Length: 304
Image 1 (cartoon, rainbow, N blue to C red):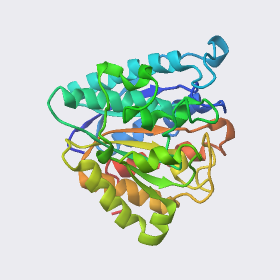
Image 2: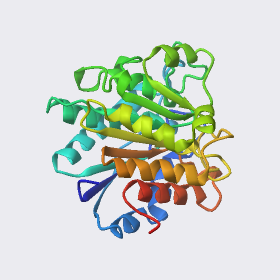
Image 3: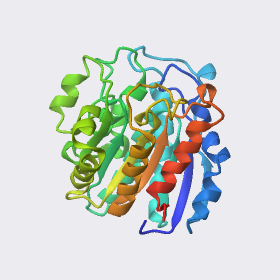
Image 4: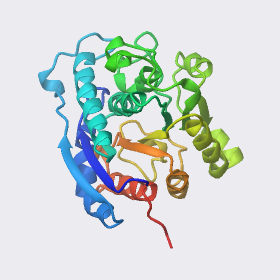
């Protein structure tokens, strides 16, 4: 990384999905030694704690097509402000989710910071899912299936219009890698959005190295750099069993590390988030430990 200070920001939100437990993801990564392991790479590590997030038991569900939307928007707004402040102080934001709806806050904070400097930002979305539903297409009404659409300017105004503008990222500068589970009504959104989506078939046929080279090029083109959003279900459940929505056939352990190593080599990553770790269904914190390993690879750890 070009900058030597990492600011860890927890976003323990689990209102965006039906399976509870991902609110413990930030704690699980800290328990796995994230702070000390980052310091071992030579970074100055600042842990800013967690942004406030409402609990489902104390919150009204609201509209069934976009459950807990006001509460999610409030947390995303707080997160966006903190991410922007971190960048302004010269730090690199590392956001720990929570469900993937927190990405609206992370990406908005990064986008706003660089927009004020007349620069655009790209986005690399490592995920089994497209997360491009809207309240009209979502089969569940769970907002964690909508954040990429919101970042691209499509969806509830409470999320699309943080800081008063949309989109936060131009579709041509957004890339999905690892896609393998897309809702039927969501597919037209993905195909017509202008986003470059690399499915697991693309990775099978081309190899991860070729896919990541193109992904990094697209997300960096005309941009100050890119925000990395890592959903741990990008990795196959054999290696990452403790995730919110596991899907078979994901990236292998080594493919996931290669993706992160190549992202580090590019020197274009501006910020990072890791989401959807669910310790409730994990095995002895395996998934959080792997997440920390992947963060380390993304921030410079090498075999030799």
